[in-house]
Length: 297
Image (cartoon, rainbow, N blue to C red; front, side):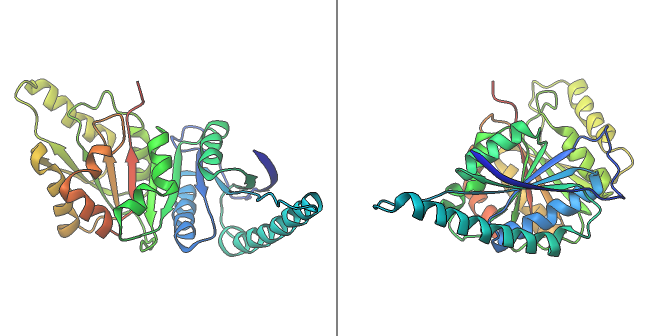
């Protein structure tokens, strides 16, 4: 991949929080409405967490196949870069220049998924924020770059539908299908978002299995109280059979601003999306969904 340019902006008001769980946020954009919606969320979370915001755009060059391919290819590349630079200048002026955050804008040649994966590693990204097209067909979600990123990385991904309009994150619904907290990564990501926005947290949990001891169940409850200490939290137990219905019920009765899904399986949400009720949840919800998976073993 070839890096074309980087714009780096430092705000005088920016203070780096070295203890933060979110130090680097990545937002891929293609200048569409849904990617710019995700950028708005990324800016607000970066402001609250003092994180550096990395904005990337990946593009591919089409090789002309004629006698003048070399000269034509150079001209096409130059024209495309000038067009993209102009778009980034406009984006920076409208969305970023007045914000008290540190940000970096990068334009790279390559496939979007490859560029995202490389950036996650190189920039030590803790949170990816991407837009979803809001299409009405589940197949469109599965075929999107956002879904490809979710499946290919253990880095938490916040998927923002284009219908979502950022106000604040006052109410979080956290759906944890696992009965153990020990083997789930990135709890601090959820913790920092919740505390940064002083959110109320509704925890949706599976009912303990019969073989689970009382001490383990109590320890899990204590874990949540310690994690969200100082915040208003509540819990709702559901059986595994009604877990997805429980999520939908929260949508219907609560004013959630963010849904956090923590999967039991290593392949994030693959089982969720195959269940009957989940399709309707994903298609109908206008909520951003923060998806967290366990590390691949």
